[in-house]
Length: 151
Image (tube, rainbow, N blue to C red):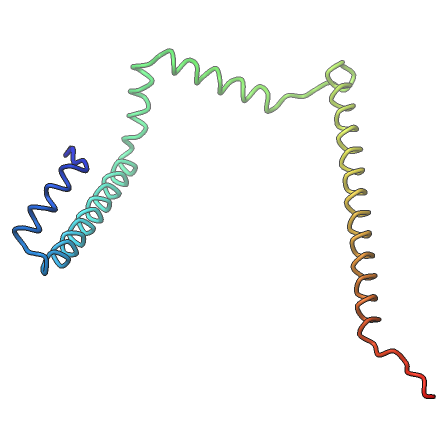
C-alpha cells in the first residue's frame, strides 16, 4: 500500500517538528499512535467478522472445490495421499509373515531398551538419594557440639 521507509519517516518527523513545534510534538505522536491503534483494532475486528461470515455461509467448501477444479493434479495427489494414509492406518500385519516377525522383534527390543533405561534411572536416583542422605548426615554431625572433657 504505502511504501514508507526510514527516509520518508524522517522527512515527516522533521516537517512535523517545524509545523507543530517541539513542545506539542510528543502529544501529537501520542494522539497519532492512539488513532493508528484504534484503526488497526477496527480493521482486525472487521476481518474477523468477514472470516466468520465466510465460515458461516459455507464459502470455504466452495473455495476448496474451485481450487480443486482449477488444479486437478494437486487434487489427485491429495486423494492419493488420503488413500495411502487410510491404507496404512488400518494395516493388519500377519504375525507369521516376515514383516510380522520383524515387527514383533522390534517391539521386544523396544521393551528391553525401555526396561533397561528405567532400571538405570532408578539406580541413578537411588545413588543420588544415598549421596544426599550422606551429605545431610555429615552436615548434621558437623553442627553437633563435640563433647568436652573436663579436666
